[in-house]
Length: 120
Image (cartoon, rainbow, N blue to C red; front, side, top):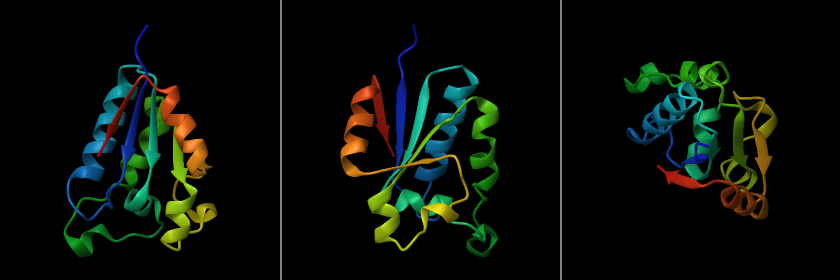
């Protein structure tokens, strides 16, 4: 039985390659039917902000990758409630509607459910 994997994405989409690398790992794991989850934490929640203009920063847009997650079988998507509140984001207005908004104690329990955790 394959081990489950939780990816914690903590970087904004414009701060470097970490956000893209996290999505690449999740998409690859989903393609191989690995039980995988993705948690957006800290500045990683900015990846889910609507109406971003990646071209203005000369970066590649991550929104297509985010929308492709369900096609790769990645349905376990989570967002930190504290991170969204601290950054002035409304969880109801995020680009991924199916993501579960979790509190700190719920995130602790979530991490305990997975066999392996990678933070980027």
